[in-house]
Image 1 (tube, rainbow over the protein chains, first blue to last red):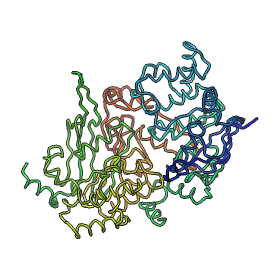
Image 2 (image 1 turned 120 degrees about the horizontal axis):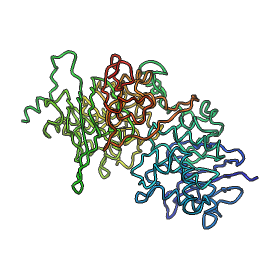
Image 3 (image 1 turned 45 degrees about the vertical axis):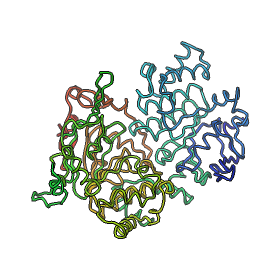
Image 4 (image 1 turned 90 degrees about the horizontal axis):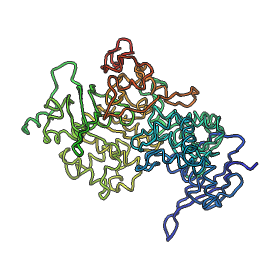
Length: 279
Length: 346
C-alpha cells in the first residue's frame, strides 16, 4: 500500500519576479507518513522556519516549486481542483491557529459542521447530518445543544478550537494538519486539545501533523519530530530522542530557549547567571 | 490641584513610616466597562475588587487567562483608561504621588509622573515606535522633555543606557521596520526605562516574540530591573515566563485575584483549585504525566456567576461557593488565597 503522505525533496520559493528578492521558504524537505501506523508527527521551529508553508502545500493551498507530494500514491498537484480537491479534503483536514478567524463571524458555528457532514461525511441532509455532527462533537467534549445557533464570538477560544477539530473529524480524514492549534487557546484548555490528538490517533487511526514552536507540548504528544530552520529540516527522529538528546546545534539552541523555572535549577538567580554565560 | 503640589509630589521625599510604603498599593479596585446601546446598558466587571501591593525592587507577576481582567487592571493602575472603561471604586496609590489615588490626580500631575516615575509598556508595544521616524527621534520625542537634557548630553545619556541593555547605538539611526521584532521590543523597553522610573508596568512584553528571542528579552528585563532597583509589574498569561522571571506572583480569575504568593511558593505549593490546575497543566519536557483539563470556559464578565466566580468549573465547589464570594485571606506569611475549601482561608 502506498504511504498516506510522501514528501520528496519539496521546496517552495516566493518572489524573485522583476528583480525582487527571492525567498526560499521550504528547502528539500522529505518525509513519509504511513497509513497503517498512524502517528502524531510534529514540525517544530521558530517563526519563519517554513512550517506553515509546508502545511499549506500539504493542504493543496500552495504548489511546490520543486519536489513532489504524494497522497496515497497520487500526485497532490492533481488533487488541487475539482473532484480531486474533494478527495484531498476527504483525506486531509486543516485546523488553523486562530479559531476566532477560522469561523465566519456572521454565521452560526453549527452551520459549518452540518455542511461538512453533508459534503464530506456522506451523511446526507437533515437528521443524518445532525446525528453525525452530534457524534463528532461528543468526541471533543461538546454537544450540539451547547453550540447550536451560536456565533463564534459567543464561544471561547478553547471551545472554538474543539469545534474546528469536530468539524475536521466529520470529513473522516486520514490526516489532520494542525498549524499552531493551541497558541491562541487558554492554558487551562490547551492540554485538553493537545491530548485529543493522541485520542484521535489511537481510536480513529488519524495521523496528526502537529505544527508548533512549543517544545513542551510537542514532547507530550509527538511520536516523531522534525526540527526546521530556515526552510530546512535540521534534525528528525523519535520525539523523546530529539528533545531529550538533541544532536544538531540548532536543536540544542531551541531547547535552551525553553524557560526553566529558576527554583528547580537552583536558588535565586541561578538561571539568569547561566543564560548570561551563554550569550 | 495646583502645579506646585505636583512638583512636590514628584520629589521623592523619604517617608518617615517604617516599613517603607510600597511603590504601588491597590485597594479594592473596581474597573468596569460601561456601555449603552439603544438605551440598553451593559456593564462588564473586568476588575472587581482587587487588592495587592508592589514593593521596592521586586518583579511582581500577574497571571491569568484571556478575559480574566489582567490587562484592564494594568490600564487602571497605569491610569491609561479610555471610555467605556472607568474606575468605579477603590484606590490605586502610588508612593510618589500626593493624591490619595491615581484616579484623583490631575492630568498635569500624571504627565509629571509618566516616564520619570511610572512607565507603561503596552501590549503589542513593538508597534509603538513611530514608523516614519528614526529611533533617535522617538527618543527625543518621548524622553528629552523628562530628562531635561538636549543635544550631546542627551545623546550621551541615551547611548549609555542602550549599551547597558547591550544595544548598539546604531539602532538610533534605524527606522523601526529595519529592526527585527526582538530589537524593536528592546528599543521600546529602553525607551520606557531611560528615565529610571520607580515602577515599570509591562503588559505581555514578550508574547509576540519568537521563542529564542523571548528568553534574551526576559534576561534583559531582569538585568535592567536588578541594576536599577526599580519595581516591575508584569502581566502575562504565560506561566513559564512567571516561573522564570517574577519574585511574587498573583493569579487572576474572572476579574478577581484568587491567589498570591512568592513565585516559588506558588509553584511549589499552590492552594486555590484554579492555581493548582494551571500549574499542574504546565507541560514540561521529560515529564510523562497526562495533563487533565478543566471543564467549561472562562466566565462571561457581563454576567459573572454568583458567589465564587470559579465555582462552575471547580472540582471542590460547595453550596457556600454558589452564594458567597471568598475574599483573599492569609494562609501563610506572604501567601494569600481566596477559597472556602482551603483550610484557614476566608
